[in-house]
Image (cartoon, rainbow, N blue to C red; front, side, top):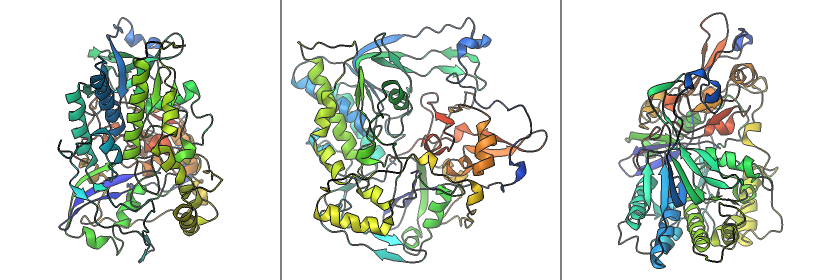
Length: 570
């Protein structure tokens, strides 16, 4: 599923809301695709067009400086920071000297963090028992839950019974970006080396195939892929163990899935988020998540909450919603996966921060045991910390995810939403998920779209500028900024596919499922037809395009470090 969060300040309270997209769309017609035989070059990124085959790069110094660490962590979200802090806590406790380096693509810690966010403090309490004394920004405890099903004009209240995963007693309403920033301060105080503005662009490998570390992205490359006079090679960070905590649909994790066949024994991941769920498994290519979100805000049970408020921020993010069935193998020689990268979100609870943090804590403890084991004999240069996955499966994280494993797939079965709710009431509330079967999901979200000819175009109401808004003014509030003169980080495996397949069959769904107006089809300069234009500077790093593209032709890679949204406590 895909997502957007709009944050508004209201007289009563500040509220975070979830999901959806906008733009003017072209009518489906026979001239939808370009008749020209020459496909215009869209992608210039070196991951698609190698530089060793480009004469413009002849003579350019490609040597990289390398640093050595014990542990390198990719991603300064709740999981990555938990792992970093726990490693240094253990090092101090046992008087060991362990170098921990953490790289983060955002210019500031927390600037790319976006969530609802109603936090279960269980893992935070384990990591920092004195979090209150240390000033953690958990200031608003939950006092009331309201849950309901919305019809076109009405709301059907649904009771939240004690013990149901939607019950938020003991949780806190937080601005997750502020919590992450605070966690970064704690990690640095413990001795973690934190490097914001450095995007991990490449996984490095030893000759024996184990992970050696990562390399940060090169800078100083023109939009057409040629080197600038200011070109600088990225930095290599080598480690005994590399922790990948990239968040949902991490681009390095995708490489690792293929390299080590980590998804061989799990189902394809599915995605979702927010207060209103549409899912990236929707079928109608005319659906615009952003515009659905704008329409949702006008529902009679929602609009009164927002009236008189002021829109002050906007952002978008996809989340893993597959649950237990979709968790891949978590360890491999030289590295492991934690947090929302493999996907530990408790879907009916709509929470994944606490489970992500716990996975980071468990990873740190498992790694520390190996680093300090004087009798350890490793088969590979990079350590294979298999006990991490074993420890995770013995923890409350696995127990929690196992109990709710069938709730989401039951709603997408023949039971439907209402049948799924009844199923949840019987098998979760009464039996706590102990049924002796596990329901399956129905394939990848990218396979769900139907051809446009089989679907009805959706007419969305015009935004009123008070409750609902247009897309571009929303994106402007995300603080998104990228260096304009760099290759687009939204790369295409084949530049002809957007027009020849996506536009001709699905009416160009990328112009609707993107929550930031990155993709648009514009008339070709000569002749009839259209071409895809990628406005990469608008990208808010949600990864929706990489997930939902029906041709799986889009590959999201990191832009220059520091680029992207600049969320303030989203």
